[in-house]
Length: 468
Image (tube, rainbow, N blue to C red; front, side, top):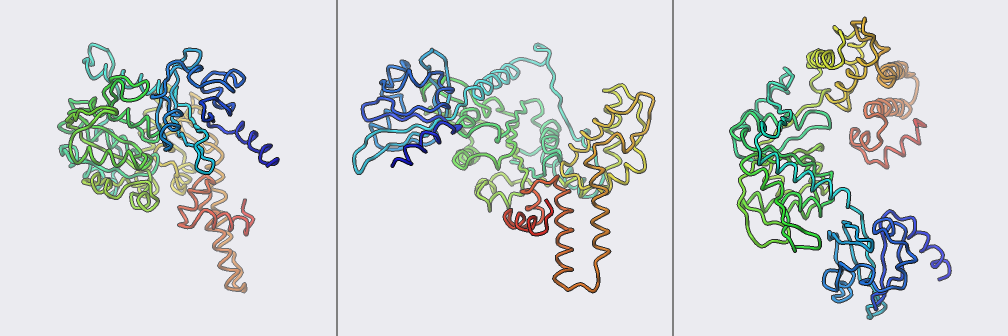
């Protein structure tokens, strides 16, 4: 007990989440530093005091701590917006749990995560989107970049197949699921589907599902009703704002499973219900969802509901990686050189033969986005009177990749034929692992996926072969 009494306070103080514990009389007995920062109250001013004395905007009905004390049931991941002791408006996502000693309820603990800034930015974005949708572009003098299929560069067969499928999707009201690694151009395809189709005169609204906690994302998507929960106001969500048009749900595999089930209901029934509301609101929205991992892996790993996948996967677009369409490399390089000649006021004509050879052998883990960033970076370094991008203009890691790749090939060629089979296989395995590590910029998780082995297995082999 003495050890626990020493360890527990230290653990609580260094947690990122706020911890607030009250006893059965509603008085605060534990209040850690993270909760101090979240609520703007010093611990000395709250310990031993009644909760409702410190938070005048709360009562026994709206306080999650008091609700749990009354019901004896936990509240998991509930959003809450309230005024703290200083009158400042704060938003948090809380999990509140009753504390029992034997059968007696003796208190409650609340674990809070500060989402005040995220919520404020999300609400501002919603309001801005609403204003832009309600006013013409000429009135607000704003015109965002709108991509169509004319902006997509590529002539390899597998890439043209993806484009042809996307073009057929543009005039369909059916849901679209786009799969592609990071940097392959998923949003470019999504915008092209919208702005080349029958809905192009209506809003195109995009939301990254990984950018917000599930509790905030639900309100952003479906809207909120005043009084539906503490701090809620009447506000339409993205479904209402995108009515008649297209809603892009980027990284759908990052959306929480509970929210995925609610999204499935909307797709099946064609109406939404604002958070805290009772009214069903019909919406006509085309859904385009994207994922940066294969749908099969996302389902197997519990990040995508199978029933939602079937509902989204009416039209499936698989964007090949740059490695799989290396024949488009020259076209892309030329396009990026033209783009950054205009933007940076340079007069670059081409890349050198050495750079071209290096590009053709490189694995491009960041795909087209990495290529564009690399060209932009090189063109910042080239002198105004130079016209050819040389190896010296590019980052060291891509040059290191070339030299290490040659060493790996050399190692395999120089395997002693007199070695035992186990030694020979170990040498080949080591070379393959080194090659894959470079391919994924030494990202252990990505390398393990590329090798189709567990992360722990890869770490064991890295230690065995003394690679890193």
